[in-house]
Image 1 (cartoon, helix red, strand yellow):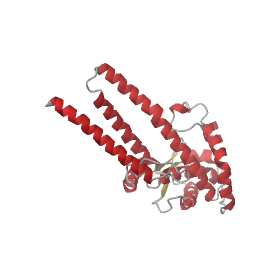
Image 2: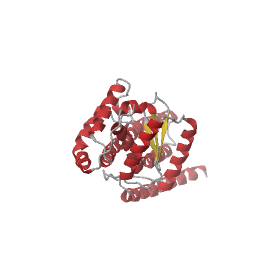
Image 3: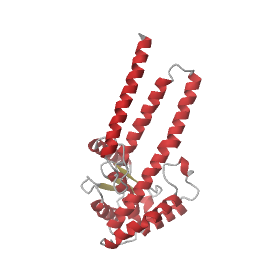
Image 4: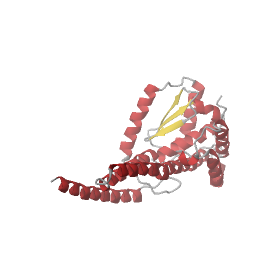
Amino acid sequence: MKNLTKKYFSKKALSVLGILFLFSALVIACYKAPVTGRNQLILLSPSHEAQLGLEAFQQLSKEEKLSNNSSYNASVNRVSSRITKVSHSPNLNWETKVFDEDKTVNAFALPGGKIGVYTGILKVAETEAGLATVIGHEVAHATARHGGERVSAGILAQMGQAALQVALRNGNPTAVNSVMQAYGVGVNVGAILPFSRNQESEADRIGLIYMAKAGYDPREAVKFWQRMNQFSKGQAPPEFLSTHPGHQTRVNNLNKWMPEALEIYKKAKKAPNKKLL
């Protein structure tokens, strides 16, 4: 009975994998990222994504200190409002909060339109146009459903690991362990990290279009990443081991996409470019 159970599980596992991959192919055909038109694999429904994002945002809001600086909050909300209105998902339940942490030079977006901006990134942004670079990028993550796509990629990686374990179940334990470790490293460096960097680059491109549509000079995005490069000099890991593209890579990409963004900016109603600090 034991051997029959293993045999049955192996066939069943492969059948389930086949069905899921077929379903994935259908999903790919049904969803494309805005601006780039890239085919996407997303196994979560938008409502499920939004619920996960809301729960995480509520938890973060309890754990992190919110900024009571009225000037910071006004600038962040003003820029967020302009950019979300011209995004591909203006009707999402957008919400932006400023977290009082000067040592954290970061911002984030969660599925469903929840955006967090740490005060530490404002000194790099310098102006509302610089801030539009940051918020445009984060809004792009949400409209392109990058969170759900990343979760889906993780699910497929786990499925691959489970299938490999089934295939190697009768092998030498030491050899099996080595293969599984190699699989983990290979998937991370060869698939997950490049996938994450591709998402970040896509968010840069979509965000550049959003800030231009909202009336912010897209050339300020290049200046922002040049400042970020100076700010983080020597602190970033090698690009192939990072979840994000290198700062110079981002600058090169932005310059490549700039002509399209400038054409959009010429036709947009110009936004005020106030100093943040």
